[in-house]
Length: 301
Image (tube, rainbow, N blue to C red; front, top):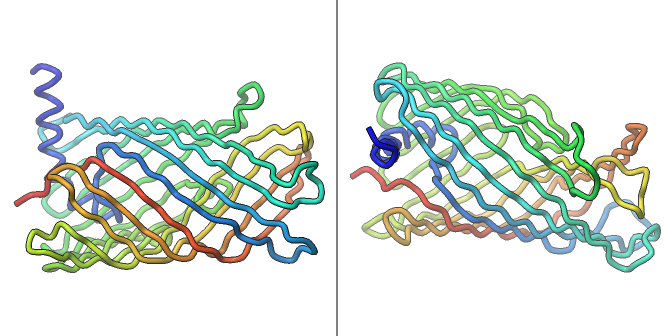
């Protein structure tokens, strides 16, 4: 079987696995570009008017391949993300605004296996370079993330699973147990990976191309950094919880526009120095806006 035919069959076969990926709290996405805007947010418990803001960009691609007897697929993915962080009115900075560019480059390997009509297993490994790339790369620039999930189908409407992930969504990497829930009935859909994310959507229009609802998502990152203004600084990590409205519109059979916005709260920042001393800061809740355009497998009829 030639290369093109193998990947075409894998693409079609993935459509049968969409319900499994939905049980993990998300639809399967083959490629995409996403942008997030976090406007100025005032720091808590400070004497001045210190503020922070973030602009985040990212793109990714996932390539699926069938392995064994149509019961297992392997997905190889690559992704890049950039965070433009801005700090305003900090007394220790010699300028009114300090801007810092932070970058992420990752490879993601996923294996999805269907045991039978009820049980499925997913394993994901995500080695990541997370740095400002201002200094020579070292082991401190490397972050290993991943997870494993088992999901059971109870009926055509409900799937529930459990798993464990190692993630930087809370800032520094931690291991978190998860519960996965997917419920779909008529125009109502619930996807959740608790405690990481949860969303409810309702489908509009006869074609169900428009979906609107509510969502929650935990978001964070951990970066190895070097800055001549702060030579003792070693790492920056941050975490936030986003709560708000979510929506998407199916532009074509395989192209989808996504948007979400609301309040970003629980915003924490941790600066780690060369001696591993931790300096914690918090900022007030503030609005956020996420936009994306993604390539997805066509829905089953």
